[in-house]
Amino acid sequence: MPYITVGQKRGSKVDINYELYGQGPTKILFVMGLASALDSWKFQVEGFVQERDEEGNATKYDPRYQICVFDNRGVGLSGSPFGFYTTDMMALDALEITHQLGWKQFHLVGLSMGGMISQRMALFMLSKKENPLHFQIPTLLSLSLIVTHCGGKYSDQPEKGKWMGRRVMMSWTEETRNRRILPMLFSEAFLADTEKTEAAYEWIKNSRAAPGGKPTLTGLFGQLSAVTTHRTTDEELIVMRDSGVPIMIMTGDEDYLVDPQNSEEMNTVLRPVQYIVMKATGHGINAEKSKEFNEAMFAHVERGEERRKKMEMRSSGEKAKIHYGHTCLMTHDPMPNSSGIHGIVAFATFSKTYTE
Image 1 (cartoon, helix red, strand yellow):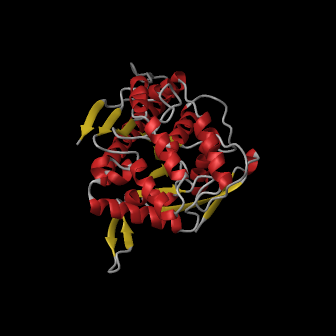
Image 2 (cartoon, rainbow, N blue to C red; image 1 turned 45 degrees about the vertical axis):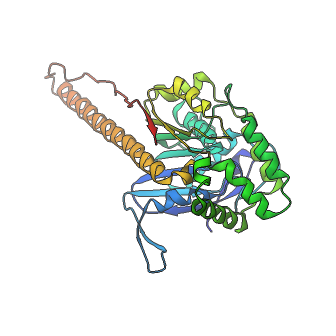
Image 3 (cartoon, helix red, strand yellow; image 1 turned 120 degrees about the horizontal axis):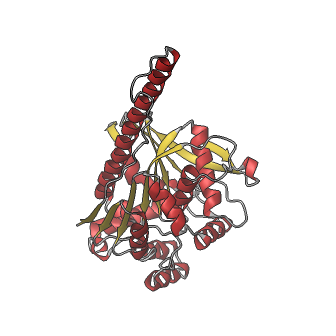
C-alpha cells in the first residue's frame, strides 16, 4: 500500500495509507469517520468502476474522475501517534495529502468524523486567515457533509446510541461484537432483511479481520479527542455559506450515533444547500443506501463542476476585457465601458429532498 508522510513541518509527523483510483481530471477526496478504515468507502469506490475481469476485479474506472480514499491518523494502516488529535490537525493531514498528489482543486466528501474534518478543511480553503501550511492550499469545488455535526447543541450522542456502544464494549467474543455493531450502523428495516444483515455482518467481519482493521488504543483515544473537542461556529459556517461553494448535507432519520437534528441545525445556517434526509436509514448511510447515496454524490459533484466552468468562463471574459481595455489605453483610443470589471456571482441551489 502507498503511503504519504504528513505533519513533518507541524511537529506531528505520521504516515498516511491511501488508495487512488482513476486518472480523470475531476478529483474527489473521501474522508471517513471514527475508527473506520478506508475500505468503509467500498460501495462508493465501486460506483466509479466501469469494467471488471472474469474474477470480478475492477479493470477500468470512469475516465472523468480520480478519487482518493485514505486511513486517517489513528486507524487502518496509517500511523497512530500518541496524543490528543483535533479535527484541525486531521484536516491539515488531508490537505497535505492532496498537495502531494498534485491536486489543485477537488470535491470533498466527509462522513461522520470525516464530515467534521471536512468542515475544518473547508475553512482552511475558504477563509482569509493565515495559511498554516507551506504550500498554496487547493481550491474547494464542492462540499458534502454526511451524518455529521458542527459541535452544536445536538452534538451529544443519542442515549440509545450510548447504550448500543456500551453493549459493544462489553462483548466477550468478536462475533458478538460484530453483531452488536450492526444496529449502530443500520436501520431496523434493513436488519429485518436476513440476507442484507448477513452481507453486512460479513463486511464488518472481514473489515475488522484485515490488517489494520482494528484501531489501536492510542489511535482510538486520539480520534475520540478530536470528535469530542470539535466545534465549527455559526460564524465559520457562514464563511462556508457565503463562499458560494455548493454544499450538500445528508443524514438518515434512524441515526443513533449522530443525531439527525445536527444536520437540520447546519442546514439552518448554511442554506441554500442540497439537504437530503433518507427515511428508514441509519448512520451507515453510504452502505445501507449506497445506490441513492452515490446518485446524490455524483449529482452534487456535477453542481460543483458546473459552477467551476461558469466561474472559469467569467474569469476568462474578465481577463479579455482587462486586456482589451489596456490595449485601448495604449493606443489612446479608449472604448466606452471597456474597462469595467464585473464581480463573479457565486450560486448554489436549494432543495430539500426526502428520499424513500
